[in-house]
Image 1 (tube, one colour):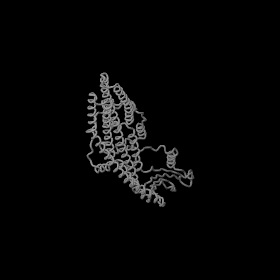
Image 2 (image 1 turned 135 degrees about the vertical axis):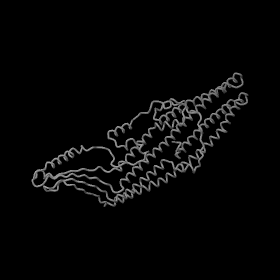
Image 3 (image 1 turned 180 degrees about the vertical axis):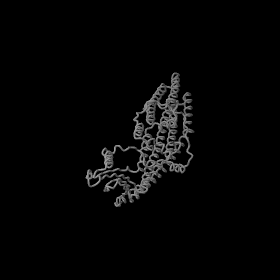
Image 4 (image 1 turned 60 degrees about the vertical axis):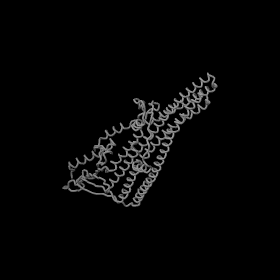
Length: 471
């Protein structure tokens, strides 16, 4: 028998497809199944959820991966004074930690379309070499197409697991934002405290200069010994030494702020604002704990992971049911001169007979779920303690600050005025005047330290309660 010309053409076409490794088949990254996600999740990624050519996707990813060195331009060159809100805004906009977490979230959301997609179909072909040129039988050729189909509900459960993981990653971004906000505020309050200490030190130097002039005048009039002038010079030198230390502290605080903004550490910063109001916490400890349990992103991230583990348990149960593979074939192995190419349909399935492996996988998924639930209870206890601790510390700082404002600082100021008048009148020695000045200087510094500590503890309370204003 002669080989039919159309059969030879079919054989040649199949050979052209398969010998080069099927390079003629189109390569796209389109998702076989639609991705159903919320609008917020869609806006999160500019690459993952768009069916675009591979070249465009690669270009977008390359533009997102930029290895920038710290900036060399000051962030607040247009501001006369620096406020805490200004710094928080710039840190959240510039700090690379958020960029890293956003990239991690992109990666997590990229797993969802992978999880809900079917495997690539397979295309196969073969022929019987002995039939080539045979006069007894027709040329035998077979082309086969197969598609694996997971059991009912498996794709959805895998998608639920991927979505839960991605959602947890988003919550972790919120947690990082809260932590960065607290870090930025603490860095600002350190910078603020140094500026106020420099201010107090300069006032102390001016006051000591007045004391020295008074002592020198009285010494020339023969009213006091030269030791008073010398003692004034010693105290002025000590205050100037303090100025050098405060200058170093200001540069270190400035470097910390610049580093948070991904800038060169030695860039200049404007002075901080003079007055920062201290807010009193009006909510009770119970209300704060309720707000924290409702808003804490790390707790909500753990709840997302629990939902993912619950889906993993359901998927492990589904593994006891078989998966399928649909097949379609087109061949002419059917012999006979009057037989044409025949279409065939088939279905293949695995037999889940290795039940011990599946029972072990189910036990593993159930144990992981139990672990997550225990971690949630532990985290809730930690949150309750953190909130109550921050609440009590804030109340303590506010009481100390109120004491310094209303009693300690005014008393030391009045004491210095009385001591200065008494020294001029010759009623007290110079060392008593200097001692009063030191007490006032330390009290003023402690006032600003108490204010900064109160602001730090308010920032800590905002973080542990996930206060909306802290974002």
